[in-house]
Image (cartoon, rainbow, N blue to C red; front, top):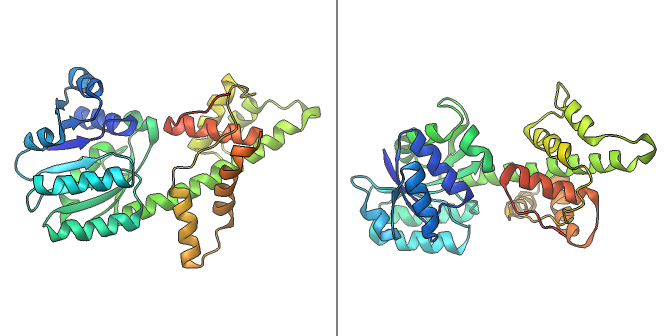
Length: 302
């Protein structure tokens, strides 16, 4: 199979590498010429000088995967792609778009005869090695075409990916996933802050988090990453207690309000990220460190 990947940043670049390793041809374009050239030379990606050039290097049923920032960048790129594609071609949005936008885009593209898939993508900077968790929304017709690609990106052919429902459902599922992630991170950060605060016990947080990794109820990949980071630095003196939010946590809380569903943990976790801009707490440093560990997100330093 062959597809075009537009956006070769941390996620798009590593997804391209995994696809190429799995035997799928990728035509890649990014605004950074150096990034394009590096992937072409080191990994065998077919380089493109522009979006038009990338589409021109596809034949037959064209598949275009977008890994762009949500909002206007994705919206404008989809608009620009329409005149370049034919009926039956497929656009995949693998970024963190709002599911309502994905629903609208699916209807819009269908009017042009173009298929659409919204793909919630989790795995962060570790996806290249471990595979990505892929939550996709699409018609069955579109999904059947893309499944071989999903199997390469996922941890294994039979797990780590799922066609969860119609257009919009992939990004909706990823949105809720990220809301839960906020709550889990907040719980770890607060608990470890309490352990650190019991100064008369002189607790070793690296030892305790490593201990919890084995057969405890709270063991998880997030705990694995936290334990590894604390082995090297428990004080986090160079990490500013500032925690950004990607937007999906906000959308999750809004969804809870719209559905009238109580979601106090997810809501408070989001609010604590807002509060981190004005507080000098250890728990915020831990949250920032965790985001960097799984997603490569920038850590604000002092």
